[in-house]
Image (cartoon, rainbow, N blue to C red; front, side):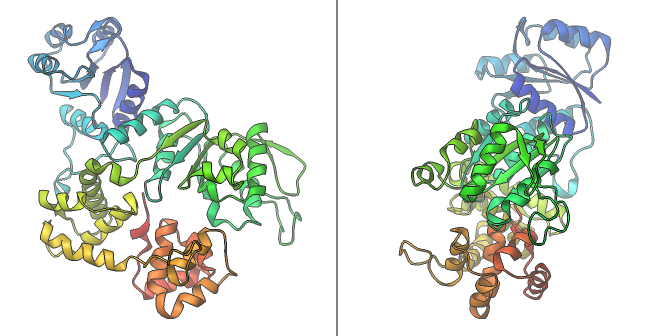
Length: 474
């Protein structure tokens, strides 16, 4: 089915088009009343989605002739003129729905689907969160600002630096830029630079030739070349060693790379998106991060807000994760209004990742389909009890579980296996849980961090009934 979109704001039109195409619609877009009328006269559309203030007039004032010629055509009106008068005028036209800007893009997509008479959401899920048009959830002002920044970089290859605390969904923003941008047909290659040993990071990023070093028995194609035609996402860029920073800067400046041990210059054909949970400016001042690299990466900085600054999104996120959990085989659950209020009052220090993990635990352990505030309390208490104790504030990472992980993350990495051996007797289960949180459920990176074999980690996770999927931020 086809939808006619009349919108003269390029960034808004891109996002709406992507959301409606994700719903299976063929979207035809124009930016004027004259072009709207020409298209309506030449072909049939299932729905008309139109802005009010257009380049050649008022979209509402001219809708009369549209409805006269096409009485069965549903009309969805968008407007930045968020006044009572505009809402009344939209209602008087008999429009199917009216959305003041900024609006929830997923709600708009569902409304267009309903207007077109398409299949309703699955009754098993009551439609909550169904048919998400974008990989991001939230309608808060803070997230609307993020959406606008995303739309501004979709049609170019400017380097983007995503800044935000752990668990805020930085990789999801990178994926959204890739999926909605002009490189979406190419690969999306993500690499956590903090999880790669310092002596291997150049080989992983740039590749190496056979014989470049001991163990290099064949040519290896690095992440830059793997991402050709698509997007390379460099996560935790603040943990990259200085030598690798220098080579990365040279690659960005020249637009070429050279494999380790090679002589051939290979042209870069990938969009670069980087992310970090660290404040890079103090690191620059301390000589821990190159200032020139920072400015190369932060051509377009995107600041992702912590969950505490977007509490209005907690309900939508929680319901989204409940639907996601049900789709993955967990029991379906519903939250009462009082339960949502309890969730809003939680600190969520781990941000969206922590909320998602909790919602999955809730879906698994709640006794009733309808979850009220009273049922949340023991689950929240259990979650708080599982949090690792913070190390003593000595200026250095402490001993024990939190200290071991902190040592690794601070690049004070002990020899492989010592984290695992030291924590095994008393802390094995919470150690695995903490490392899985850090790696977002990636078992390969978790095994590397622990210094153990991946198969050993999988075996112990099974024996301890730890599901790594519960720690994966989608």
